[in-house]
Image 1 (cartoon, rainbow, N blue to C red):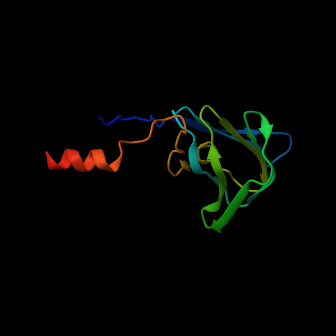
Image 2: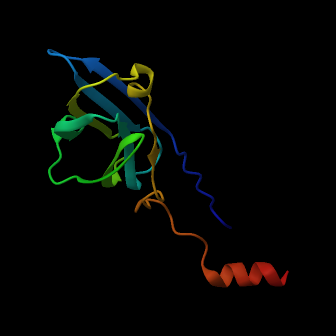
Length: 145
């Protein structure tokens, strides 16, 4: 017999920007929580910083514990600076919080500032507790029937 394991992918994500002391200063909070049945590999959280603003004081936390050495990449064009945080994995029921400050001058589109720009991830990480799939011999025998 073949045992089928269905792993549910489910996550919640969101973003909030708050104006803080001083003109042209905002705190940006991004949340990503893995509510699925398995850990996720190669998670990338993406955000866009408006033109004329720059990011300062970034902190990434997993379940309220600071993560060190989180890789980021940035690319700037006319629409702003796209920032991507690269996380090797996000565990089952793990919550990632990204908090950073931006400062700058000029008009800012608050709707754009509060828009979540997405998360992408690779495969689920295999659970060692799951039983292996049916052996190859059983599949071959099934095909001959």
